[in-house]
Image (cartoon, rainbow, N blue to C red; front, side, top):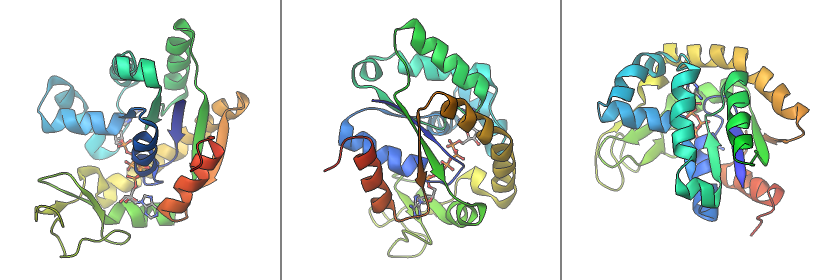
Length: 217
Ligand code: AP5
């Protein structure tokens, strides 16, 4: 399965991609996570992308395309397919991806479009936290830790992502308003889109996805 998870920030792409990836064994390729890891490890890529990611701007297409195609060329993606989370973000990226796959005789199988309103997105993103020691994810609204501010597993401190500040959330939503609809149109024209109401419970959404994508329990 070569799947794209499309949707605004906070719509649950990363949450669902992680579950589906565990279920299917296909790699979860998250451009946001690749950039955050590069920033954490102070790599050259990290220094190139930090100012974009932390302010909620898009990283230039040529940088994103190169790292995604390097990742997709690896054996696990070639053998098992992939779940793309956060890519493509522009029609130019989508065209580049189609070209890259077509050169290898491949193509995208399905595009899941996560539909959800801004008010709920802001609630989710404002509540998102992760443990700075072990990386485990929490949400102070939807998945709170047992002890406020501390990881259940390692007692590490819970922190917010830099781009989950109110200014950066606002900017990410503005950028999404400009870029998401043209991408939706691009994939609708190809007949690949399955739209899902992303406001439900995490598990319910997973069940709908598994049923639609032909992998129900
Ligand atoms: P990226 O990491 O891709 O961020 P994003 O698209 O803004 O998406 P998020 O990770 O914020 O949200 P999500 O939809 O994955 O939701 P999640 O599952 O975490 O990108 C970060 C930055 O990198 C970009 O701003 C840009 O600068 C750069 N970038 C990345 N890709 C790029 C590209 N292709 N081109 C250019 N630049 C690029 O859920 C959010 C919260 O809600 C969590 O706390 C979760 O627990 C909770 N939650 C999830 N589902 C539910 C549910 N059903 N009910 C209740 N709570 C839920």
